[in-house]
Length: 162
Image (cartoon, rainbow, N blue to C red):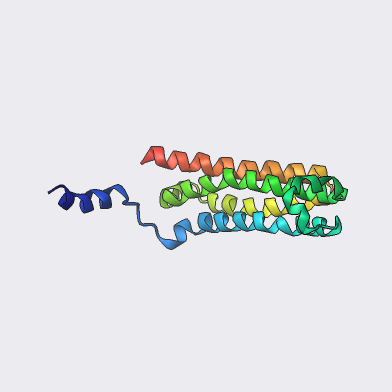
């Protein structure tokens, strides 16, 4: 008897709003591109490790190799680590906006621009960090954080309005 109630209860518990493809598109792409930036950050780090004469034995203690990296390689390592940190903040904001996309975009049409801007700023951040241009790096970092904060803000507003 209890098993006959399980499918309707399960279906009701996982029901999500059906969104038009265009409504959630900017947030989905922002999520995908922000993840791609994390992968992109491996390129300068890999080049630095190659220049530091990376050996398979370095896999036993990868942090010990850090001292052999050139200065730009150390910055590439830090930029790579920060890419993960930025992604862990940005991904939930994108997911929140995906869930409430139709309402969020209707209330704030500029939100799609903010979603697209974040991955672009993160690419600029990587380039500025590796090239040792701290002012540009800081502006890109602050802009990326602001984009994420705006996504959270508008997403939460949309949730509270519904």
